[in-house]
Image (cartoon, rainbow, N blue to C red):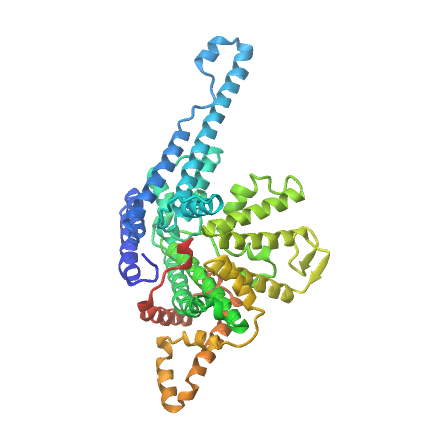
Length: 526
């Protein structure tokens, strides 16, 4: 089920809100959580009922592992040890043996948890990619399974991995089945994040004070949800018209049309992911639940390192906490730190998709962040702990960062390495193929219908220029919005004035009218 659909907006969401607050108002707190988890499962199963079995099995296996960890005996001396040793030695020896057994038990459960979760993720997301490369390298002929990727599997797998790892390390307690299921399946973040942690969510679901309707939180949730919906429906989907056409014409693009194509995809990706993040947080607020910020105006960044502190924040947090730090982080010297940094970006690329293009994209960003960490060139006013040798002004840092990110998207968006390399060649191809007019012509949207009809009657020869002018205006609007306070900042820090409420009403009606061209979110593919 999509956030940007009539079914979700007019049926699913009202029913879920009504049930949640009704059960809580009657004091049936556990039943309210069961209802919310059940509705979330419906939300997920609506895409494909077979996905539901995968999600439920994953939840069941991880909860069972957590339950097994709760059966570990306390740090006490077994009776046989107490009888076998005199009082002077029994305490130390008994506790040492008990501690050793408990450590082995925890490590065993951790190993099983890693194998189960990563095994499920590997089978559904990477099996065909792995077999394809085995066949290529060893000239074998193993059959591909062509497995349909379950939606959100990367998100709910990482979410549960964080819980199991922390359980095995003794960082968190065992929770009730209802709380755990609600934590994993809470529908606003189930499909495309943020990757939430148990300590952020479960205490909120168990906090009775959050079960009452909060008008301020609810109104801000609606405000943020509509702003996110507008980003997706009115901006991301419009840029997608140009990006999809441009990338389908990779081998016939000239320099200018290549730049326009990648810029269109840049803003499609930005407003798509930003819109989903805003809608997820807004939906959480409607239930009086606070989700972490996952997207914080990354296109304002003046360095790639800063970019990754703003883009997909919870994914970066996961890799830092559960990969970078266990690998040694920055504790084992600078060279090891740089290697660890590069490794997590390779994994980040692979997390986004089972293809060499994603790995190349991750490697590009890994090298760029390693370069930033070397501290040779720094951005004035944006330095970290280690001063740089040379400094550049922020505006120049922004140009480099934005340009390099766009270049990396050649690999992120292309269907093959050859296509990505061809796009790089196109930048220096020169010439004029006329593709820019064809790309602009893809903006034949319903909002321009009346203008186009009038222009065709008055000056038909100028009609093609209408789309070019609209394209330029669209890019100008995108750059303007990037440097304005983002939706979260506007919603949480500003007052909900009557003027803003009217704007939200207009945007909501506009979005509803435009829902006839519903499209999925890009991060559903990851």
